[in-house]
Length: 461
Image (cartoon, rainbow, N blue to C red):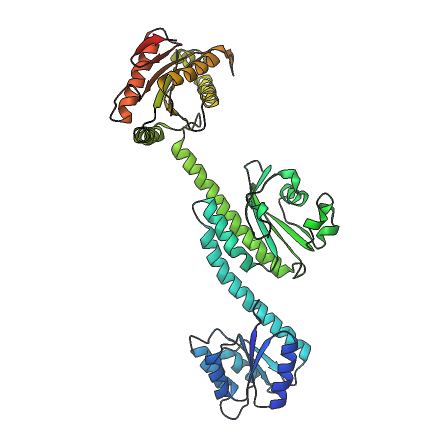
């Protein structure tokens, strides 16, 4: 970290020397000026963080120097602390009124002087941090978790005094952690996933829904079950990331070099946690909206609109790479009778159960949607009609043999399926493929139901 720069302005050489030795010993970078004109010239060449300024000087007095510094847009942010033998209240008020930040009387009480300077630099440091924090809050308020994680990795380390940090998100149940950002040296941590009980300290923070801290982590109860050579940090802090009662993740802070947190640092880190929580909550809500926009609310399958989008893209891909594509339609037989006899809540249970069966028999590359009512549509890339029929038959037989559990007891249903592919048919659009698969479904239902029919193939199974 860059050392703070102090400019001492005093026409007395012995005072300049005493202050220079004292401040250098306390870790500051120090410059000295014997007059106001020299001081203003030095400020323009090497801008200090703070000017320790005498008032009574032969050329320009301290008040005039302060006025000039505060009127200049480039220098008005420099802290000005008057150091003077003038003790009257009116003198101090005059100095503060023209923009000075503090007033210290001579002769100096060195411990008091150093303490005041530390306070000023700490305030300056937090002012800079809050400016960065505003940018950080903006940069992590993004539309996807990867961009957010990169912003955290790039910027969070500059906001905290700790050596290391890590940010985990949780699933909705709070039982599983996923590491999204960290500044640890170990690359193997990237993408780390772990269960709730693998980190006792994080687990406790999330159970209590409040921060958990240790100033001697290696000697704490949390380190009992971990490898000591990997957890040598003196202090550790876990803050749950939450929105109300909803758990979103956890922020871990740990290190050695700066000792444990005081209240000011802790409050700042707690504010960071609130900002992270708000951004994670926004992302979770955005993901929910995206999910609702593309899925059927009852079955969680893709909806009618999204299926047509996928049909168009898969059809184009099939044509471009000259690979087969099968479209399969499925319809629950006599579903109106189920609703009329058992009621719509039971019908909804059947719709969800059938959706589960379809997903269980399809690959991750396949597409399944609730097309409307009791009808489902499926896309099977790189699959011709005969292979699709084998899949359809597994689905049909599985559903036929199942007794579905409903609020009105066990219930058996069957499905009819229609298939069309791109191999034997020179279709010019996905819409034509869909229409012919629907014709095959109509044949299956019209021919007795509980069977599979392929378009242009009259045999059924």
